[in-house]
Image (cartoon, rainbow, N blue to C red; front, side, top):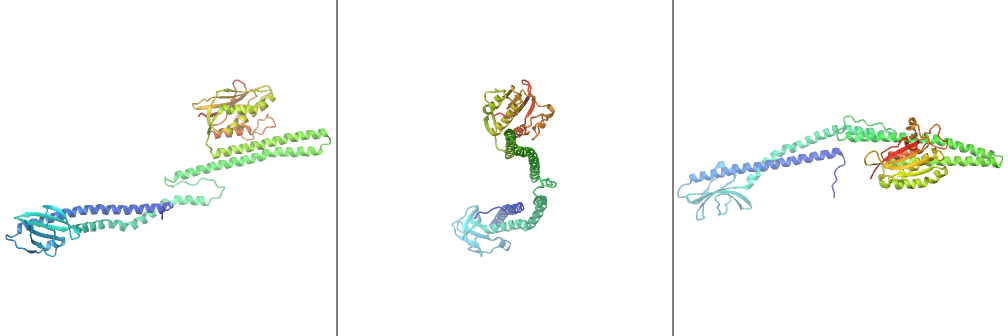
Length: 445
């Protein structure tokens, strides 16, 4: 069965702290055991040498075979004492102790016997071999007891530490719980920023980004509400006009009056259809801008040729000259459909406002900044006064002397496309044709 970490931050912190405490206790116990074992080895090895030297100095001449009683001061150390002759005969051994194998290595050696390991110290004196040995389990038991006594306080303090850490985590996460409560009790239309004071450094950026998201949503809702209100207002006029034209058609008494009423009705339907289409295009561009669709590589010159080819018929109908100048090819990163819509709107505006016999020039030139390509549309029309150049980019705004057939959405849609590409339309006077010049800078590939 696969174990899963808890999703609660508090539970994870407590779990990590508990593991850290246990790991610290184990590490401390291991270090204490190692240190205690080294001290026990040094201490008992010294005791064994002293015991051997004592026996070496006190052995009588003509030692007989027998059993050597263990001195009282050495009984707690489980020492084994043996004396051998040089021919391998056991002369004396300590009482109540196991007999070790008849092997002697001068100095210290580890000998396996009776299912355990003995630490043996051997020394030769007067033709005899004196051996002092001790079961290694005694040393390990002493080191283990010392390690346990060292780690026990940490283990006993673990519950206290857990309670203290739990209280600290609860106090630390209290601001996070407060923010959660603020979000949980909010209504759907409440986009006020969350309170970010007293938050941990790790959580404050999240709340700040969330507040930024709320601010962007507020702006988007405000724009959408204003768009709906403006669209409803703009649609009211053509719909009312259509209703009046239908009524006029019903009151027509002869064929000529009926034909004029039908023409006005047909023109009104065309205007309403164009307005609805532009509203749909504007909403679509705003949705694409919100989605953040990645840009693709495209040839801006080829795109401009296509749009100009579609607009040539309308320009020729007004005896206007339309052409393309500038670079032979220009690779940029952008959205082909959106840029096609932008250029079509700019050209349609230029055709509408340029007098008959005028000229419209579309240019693709190197941008003013490195790594940028500029799309330029200029005409020989009346242009736009400098004071109005910012307002004409707003939706449904028309110049006072603008034709009544417009809806004030063409430049607004183009501006929305420009913003999608991280730029904006720049309006000024054409230095060569004298009318309006619109520039858009795009990133070169």
